[in-house]
Image 1 (tube, chains in turn cyan, red):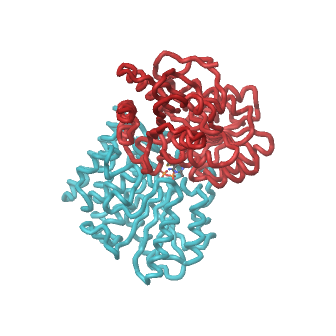
Image 2: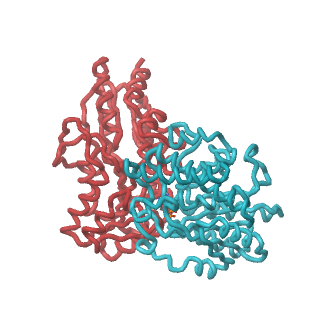
Image 3: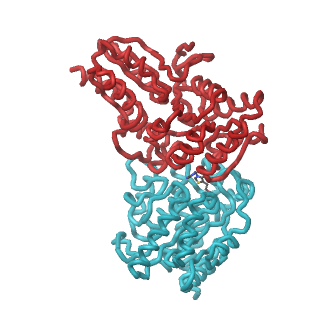
Length: 284
Length: 317
Ligand SMILES: Cc1ncc(C[n+]2csc(CCOP(=O)(O)OP(=O)(O)O)c2C)c(N)n1
């Protein structure tokens, strides 16, 4: 990847992270940990890989995104606002009565949101159905399915994976956010996932492991996934819960923290650093 | 016997759930608590600390949790499972139906944050249909406690019974209704306020609003009797028949769809009886839930004292 492109992706991640942190800090609650761990992915998708038209969110030939771990909605909303789907001011209506930005994504409310999610597991099957329809239509569209690693506890994920693998449905690019934590603790404490990538391989997926903090690695993984012709594809992203906000790395409340003066200061310093990075590199 | 308590803000119901389970676990090693990765939300992770052998973490796998509870109950355990109300009912309905009720196993289900209690979690996590679903399964017990006293009593009593018991309750505190030490009877409603013009039936987190509305209507010369119908199933048809008799109007007030919930229960009784008394059902009216604060959602779905008062005044015109 050339330097200019990589810089664009990195600035894109910085902007999404800033916007998401500002929104959550303003709201005083929210699913920070799982939103932060998909920031780099969102930047890589919306700045490079995805076919979309913000002026026509319902464009028939677009690529779809299904955020099955729907509680990470705020990271998606920031991305959509920064990419022209709606006015970033709207972000400051998150969870207000009557908002178009509910905590969990709703395809009937938000421009750019392709699937309604929030009940974990269900987005996987919906993505499988969208991909299957692409196949029937002989379309080259893709659907990017983002699944949480804790979400993999749900049997429905594995039902969907069976279907995707059986049909060699490479229209669906399955991306697992392996941040190693769920709500009540680490995956290993709650339900040991063993080797997620090996499981996906055993299910019949061409499986790619990628560093989810590294835009270039993620982009390469998506390129590789797109090139696979005769098998289902899966990217297991190695991420950190609350990625980019070290204050939360060892905290047990990183899933859905309450905000206070201490966390505000930590968040403000992350925002300042990221803003400096953007400014030093020619702004957005 | 129960007694009303002076108005007050009650303790968090999730804390009451946890503490009551911890208390009954002391004397009964067969009582177990199961969680589906919402132990931080319910407080059940505290039970994991105090009673590690009586806590089971199943992960984000609600249907699996119901089956595991059923299996444990076949070996004499008394499972209490928790997840949010929509996941505890809608998402796992066949498991509850078949491996729970039909197979005659015992599962105590805490469905938390029902209806508008969902607040920030929004429309996907809203349950305006959980009562309708659970009461349509034969032999279930469906309970919507109004406050901490009624909830704690319910939890303790459920440990003595077999079958599928659905306990629908807020995680936050509800306004206090009952005095400490009050006891109740499943399947029996409580007349918590006498009145002669109107019969107002409610339950759960809405009960205090019904009571307050009745007090305000008294000032306008309308006498309202208030019933706490905390057991939705088995339903106290006898009480509805006797208390509706001679009234000008019956009103139900619930944090649930008027289809299939308390309003339907009362309508069925009045119709069966041929009572011929007008009925107004206040609740979510065949609509989905949405996101917002608790107060915003109460306004949006007409779950306010003012709405009760206006409805009754209008109907009596
Ligand atoms: C069916 C269902 N059960 C429970 C929940 C509550 N819940 C929301 S997020 C979460 C943990 C998710 O963990 P993971 O998938 O690893 O997400 P991440 O760590 O990336 O935030 C839980 C249990 C839910 N939204 N849906």
